[in-house]
Image 1 (cartoon, rainbow, N blue to C red):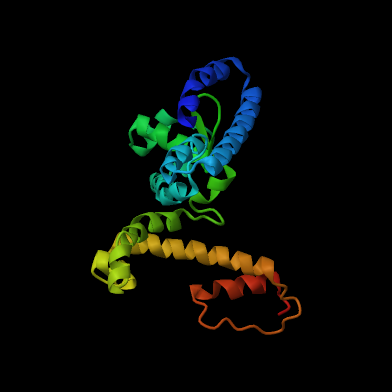
Image 2 (cartoon, one colour):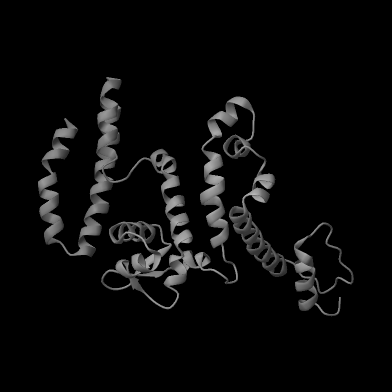
Length: 252
């Protein structure tokens, strides 16, 4: 059986991993994965019984989880990013790399849990390792900083708290046709945000950051040099977009 053969090579793989340099090990893994995938494909074509397919599929998943599984676990990543935003980890690392112990002390969190959180966020590219047990903000995680152009920290917190809770009622929403937000909070979104001061404040901050980001996108995407008059109907934001355009194009 293919599964028995795969089990027998595990000790050999361990020996190879301990003896090969990292670069050679990565090359070996790539070749081994391709060979294993070809073997599984070839064997699947020859197997008459459908009952043998789950065992063969499990062999093919040794190197990589199925895409559907990765999609189903997507909330693991989104919640990890939310926790980093809520604790203000990016702001704490603004001055330079810090250890998990230092991050835990500053955020009043558990050291071991913080270390595992940071390792997970490094794996998705939001943070990066910097020396022994030290972490820094990566380019992808820069929007987690507060009060910087393009900041998404407040938006991530809103998505990770209020919206995440509402989405837990998606099944009921699909079955009944009702919106998930009132099912969770007992009120429509804006009514609820008007009642919950803290949630409303975070949401307003998020919308302010998003509005500023949208304004920058518009300014970079369109050339208004030939425009003599411009009206922003229902723009809101105290005319921020129009003000920015006028600053860039004073002859308008």
